[in-house]
Length: 98
Image 1 (tube, helix red, strand yellow):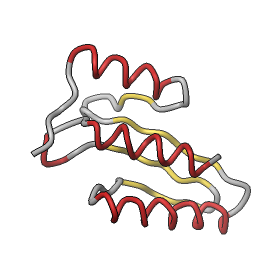
Image 2 (cartoon, rainbow, N blue to C red):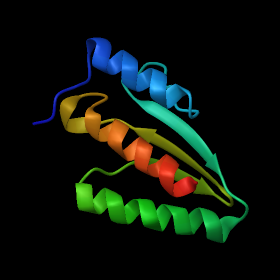
Image 3 (cartoon, rainbow, N blue to C red):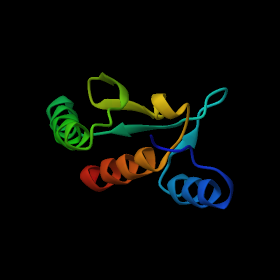
C-alpha cells in the first residue's frame, strides 16, 4: 500500500506543484488544477494521453471536461489522501499539456 505524503516531503511536493498552478483542495487531502486548451479536440486528445499513462500506472484522476477545459483532482483513495502517485501523475499531466 502507498503511504500518504507528510512532513517535508509533502511540503516540497506541494510547493513544486503550486508553481505550476496546482492547488490544495479545501476540506480534502487532494490537489486540483484546471487545464485550458485551444479547443475540444485538443483537450480530449490530452485526456486520452493522460488516460494511457493513468492506466499504465494504475492511478486514475477525478476529472471533468467541458469543451476546452479539463478540471482535475488528484488524491489516492486507498491511502486516504495525497501520495507520491498523485505528484507523479500531476507532473505527467503538466508535461503532456506542454
